[in-house]
Image (tube, rainbow, N blue to C red; front, side, top):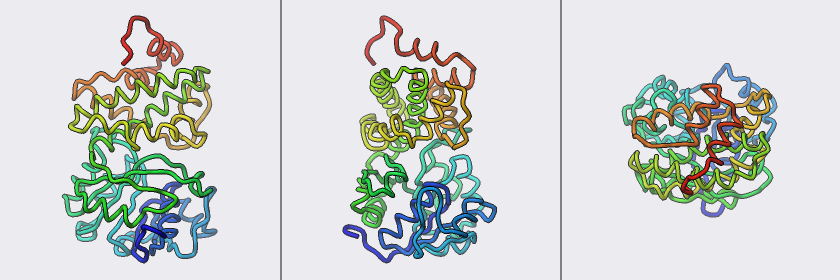
Length: 326
């Protein structure tokens, strides 16, 4: 495809919704692609059996494997899509010699729940720095991409040359990739937009959707303070990883975090993964350690973890008198 040098190899680690899409997309870009999943994974068994899931059908060019050593040997470029809580354990279980010289691209959004660490830091620590690490972030849902609805995303790393190589490999008319220039800001922004998405869902469920404008304005300003306190550029919050992802997270019917928030306040079960929930715990820790006031995050913490009434907390948050705009 234009702008994407074909014929290179890609390994995708993780066969859930986004992992399967990445394998589909990598093959679409013309790369020789292998998709890895754990031997016990029901999703992998389904893909091996019928080569499709509820979102897409994998082309024949995608090889599917449950052999981790084989998957790691397949390519120097590993696209990783898994839950944040599984990331450190995965990296620690892989022998160092199988990761030396490889580039791990974290196609996932979150912070380590128990430590508040950024995911690139988790990988660098767990792998003892033997590989390069990048992130692939920004808006987009599988359901839209497979219908040929394009979007823009961002890739960032500590090494701009690594970033450029990845952008050349994976840019296409379907996904336009931009060069990130603030790894801290992009990681924190991408993780925290899921928290704002939960708040948006709660407003929907409480029939207070008109307050989403205030949520977006105040949410981006709030997170910019956290990014600055952690050493990033506060302006990054207005890029693709955070504000640029608000439509897909705060409004889309495909957003798990928005749906979780709506279901929570309407007392309905929600079976899918909403990464904003564990991320919230990490952010509350970061707010304390960096002495940053995060009213929206702290309000959600009261609702989700302290049992406070959602309507009362959110009305107090947005409708309290005598408060400056931001």
